[in-house]
Image (cartoon, rainbow, N blue to C red; front, side, top):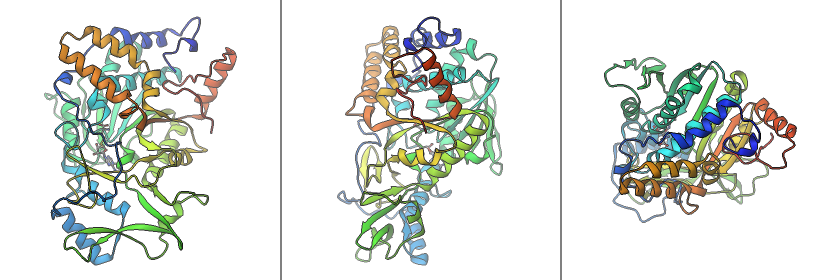
Amino acid sequence: MWACQDAYPSSPPPGRSLVRSWLGMNALVRRGVARVGIPCIWRGKCFSSGNEPAESNRVTPMLRHLMYKIKSTGPISVAEYMKEVLTNPAKGYYVHHDMLGEKGDFITSPEISQIFGELLGIWFVSEWMTSGKSTAFQLVELGPGRGTLAGDILRVFSQLGSVLKTCDISIHLVEVSQKLSEIQALTLTEEKLPLERDAESLVYMKGVTKSGIPISWYRDLKDVPKGYSFYLAHEFFDALPVHKFQKTPQGWREVLVDIDPQVSDKLRFVLAPCATPAEAFIQHDERRDHVEVCPDAGIIIQELSERIALAGGAALIADYGHDGTKTDTFRGFCGHQLHDVLIAPGTADLTADVDFSYLRRMAQGKVASLGPVEQRTFLKNMGIDVRLKVLLDKADEPSLKQQLLRGYDMLMNPQKMGERFNFFALLPHQRLHDASQERNARQSKIPTSSVAGFDELVWQ
Ligand code: SAH
C-alpha cells in the first residue's frame, strides 16, 4: 500500500513522500458537496428478477420497440434486452437521461464524497511514480457519469503539480450517452472555451479541461489512442449486458425475454427450448444452477490487457460484484427504488453484479490482476481516515462536517457500500515482479503489497 510506512522504512523516495503528505496538507472541499442529501439506496444493494409487485404496466416507446422486435424474430436474450433498453441510440435509458444523484435513480460513490475521487487520483499518481514516471500518460475513464470522479482526480493532479509538472497528461472519456457527455463537459471544461464537436467522428467531442489538459470523448474504447494509459471504470461493468442461464434436467438453458400471452403489453421470462450459442461462456465445472455471463466485459478486459501489456500503465476497476459465486443478480432501479426489470423498459436502470473471477480469467496470460478487495479495505489502505480528519478540521460549517461523516459512513460501512463494492486492478506482469523483488530485498515479514490500496499481491 502506497501510504504504508513499512514500504519505505528508512528513506522514502522524495516524490512518494510528497504524495503521501498531500493527504494531510490540501484541504480543499469540493464546491456544493455539503448541499446534497444522500439517498439511502445504491445500486449494489439488493436483488430482484422481476418478482416484485408489478406497478402499472406503462407502455413506453422502448416497450413498443421490443414487442415489435420479439413479434418479428422471436424471444430475445436478456443481454439483447439489456443492451436495447440501456444503450439503444434512439430510446436507450443511458442515452438521454441524467440518472445519477438525489433526483435521479441511483447514487454512486464519487457523487457521495469527494474523498473517493481524491484517493483514486492518488492511486494513479502513485502508480505513475512507482512504474518509472513516464513523460506522458493518458487517463482513460469508461462510463464517466456526470464527470464528478474525473473532476476530483483532476483536482488532485493540479494540487500535485510539482510532482507531475514534467508529465504530459491527456484525458479520454468513453461515453455512449449524449446527455451525460454534455454534463461531463460542463463539469470538466471551461465554459468560455468552445468544444469541437463532430458527431460523425470517432472522437465526437474535444476540448480542454479547467486546468488546461486536453480532453476527448469517444463511444468505444477501441477508438482511444493506444499510448501509456491509466484506465478507470467505476460502476461501468455492471451496466454491460449479461446472458442468464438456468440449469435444467436437459442441461443449461438460456433465459429469454418474451411477450406474455396472458396479459397485453407485458413481457415475461421464458427458457430457451434448446441450447443457445452463448452457452459456450459457461465453465465446464460450473456448480451453480443459475449463472450470468457478460461477454462484453470479457472483450473490454481483453482489450485493456493487450493495451497495458503493450504500452504499459494500469487499470483500476471498481464495482459491486462477486468472485464467481452469485447467481441471480439482475435488477432494476428507478427513483432510488428497486424496479421490476421487465416493467416500463427505458425508464429504469438495469444492472447485474460483476463476476470478478470472469474478468480475471479474461486478463490471464497477458497482465497480472489484483483483487477484488472490498471498498472499505482499499480506501483504508489509501488513507481515507487521514483525509477525512483533515477535511473535518478545515470544515467550518456543522452541516459540512455532517455531510463528510455521512459520506464516509456510506462508503466504508460494511452494511452499506463498504463490503458490496470491490476494487480490482490490471497491471503489467513486470510491475508485480518488481514489487515482490523490492519486498524480498528488504526482507520484510509484513505481507503488504507495494501496489496502493491492495493488501497482498496475487500472482497470475
Ligand atoms: N462512473 C460514474 C457513472 C456510472 S453509471 C459514477 O460512478 O458515477 C454508468 C456510466 O456508463 C454512464 O456514464 C453510462 O452512460 C455509461 N455507459 C453505459 N454503458 C456504456 C457503454 N456500453 N459504453 C460506454 N459507456 C457506457
